[in-house]
Image (cartoon, rainbow, N blue to C red; front, side):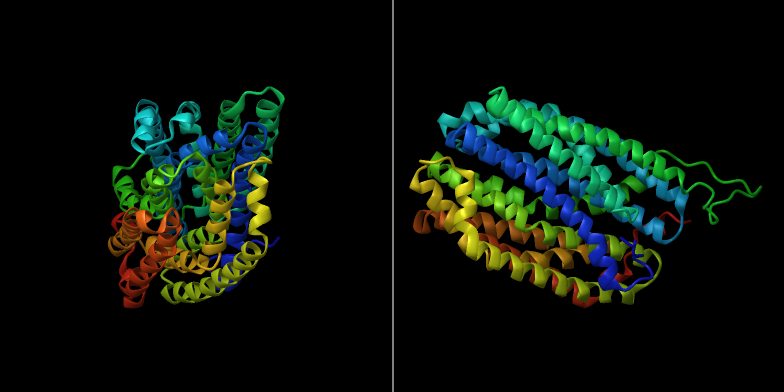
Length: 462
């Protein structure tokens, strides 16, 4: 497959072929988490599936924090790449790795200390509480590996290389599935086996990814024509820059919010779902897994637009950014139509795959109701993701942050306020309301053109 340049090739081709490996990679990532659920649901039982569901919202928040942090790093890295300031590009990579490794260790310790308290605060049913706590404790022990795996993938994307993360995701996904079958079905380790399989598979991939990245950065040696000392020798690369970290944080915090908005929303409304019992939670978990798969092309398209925007702003090509946004609108609209058709036609078969024979009608009915409703609204998260991608790639974070907070607020308020009236359906009725509101606010900011005057690396080039 030809490698398309974000700076010179047509926006349609460069965005699609850059996003495609990310979509495939994230689909593999979602695929093995889905297989986790299927294997546990089929071979351990409905309660075990519900326990993973109770844990999933919390674990996904931490991973989305990692992805958002990686995007914060990738915006700075992409702008330096577009400006051909390669030494500073390397410094941004090293700064990101050191900083986020430290953050991941801290978050892992916090998770270990407070996971039980959080689960109880979310009104997790007593019959699944111990399994959910076990899953989370194993997960948080391996959080630094899981965290760095996602940071490294974002850095590869910033360098215009979305294929390496794809290959590593395929490897880790297949390894995870194999270990699931061995540990859960073969040795009967239950929910603990599913957690161990995830940690080991992604941990090994993180180590391999780090080695490949270090080799890749060596390829830029000698290209720093703008970064020579007076004697003509190349400047040494700085391994940590606090000013760069500050600029990364400016983008990373709203990016973490944007990436984790679905997960934070699910976590905050988890107590609403939990209040309807473990059977409803099992059906909701199955539906939520499918929703997570369906939003993959939308989120990947938004991330591609973010890299496209950052590189072209670094090169001073504002009009290309606008053309890229138009191309991305067409792309997510096509994805939304395909998703709607698949879910409308096959949602019953999909939900039945998650649940063992004889599962309660509450579980099956909840999953089917969830998917048959949400199928028609994925275009909103697609439009939201690509418009947010432009703002994020430009480093324009204030309105972007407010739009995502509005999204989160609507989801939480509607779920809590109307669940007593509408039942558990209020949880998913709130979802497209939040997506659409987020898009409208971000799009108004995009139309203003003020994002085009942002360029984070200007502070660093002096």
